[in-house]
Length: 169
Ligand SMILES: [Zn+2]
Image (cartoon, rainbow, N blue to C red; front, side, top):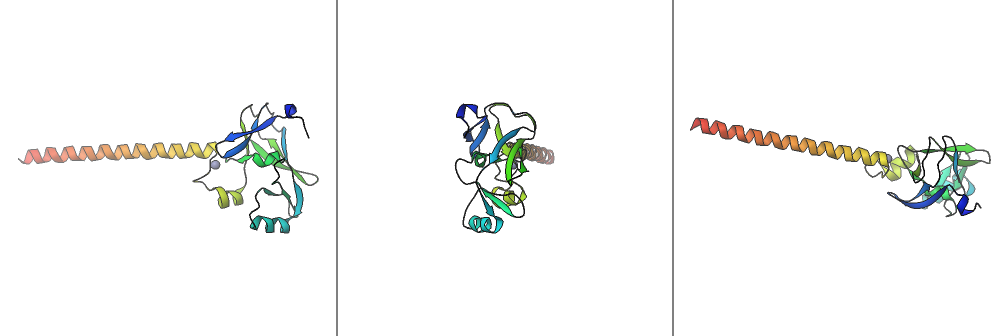
């Protein structure tokens, strides 16, 4: 185990519960953290997952890592649709996360959990990543702008109706 002071990340509060945050900068392609846990044959991992086990990381067509133990710091890495880290397979077999680009201190470390996980557990309307939050804020702003336009149109029509009624009199 590494000494705490040597660690380049810490566990902290994020918009999606707990998350892993950089405490020091990472260069592009730099190693961030290893996905640690016991290695299981995929069939056994499937059985455990069906019974509610989370944190199963399928490495290849044969092996899955059961990363449910708390000492597996990589399990705190949340999903993002615009992630700053990505999973890379290493010999062992094992999985490590590496930086996709420069990560600054205090930035949350995120990876893309993949299509299957996303559609089963997260979904577009509930994803709490920065990108989705921005997308939803944008949609809401557009909805508000549209509502305002519709309101102005209604007021205008009402004014025109009133003016027409006046002319008739
Ligand atoms: Zn998202």
